[in-house]
Image (cartoon, rainbow, N blue to C red; front, side):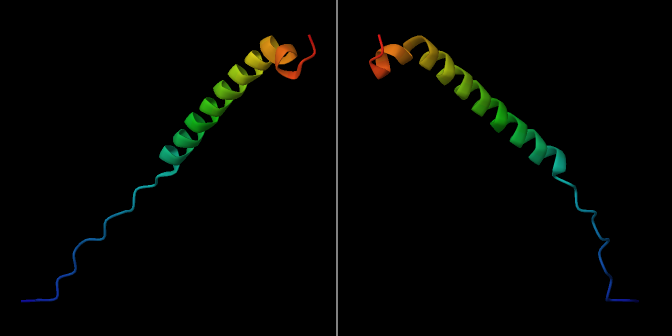
Length: 52
């Protein structure tokens, strides 16, 4: 008998889709925060900078 049996090599699963998904979620969150901040600044910018 052969005592030096090599276990089968498992194929490594690619995480590309997971990484792309996480990056897209983070970018969408940044976009929402920037849009909300821009809207708030549009509505309150004059009072904030004393231009009213």
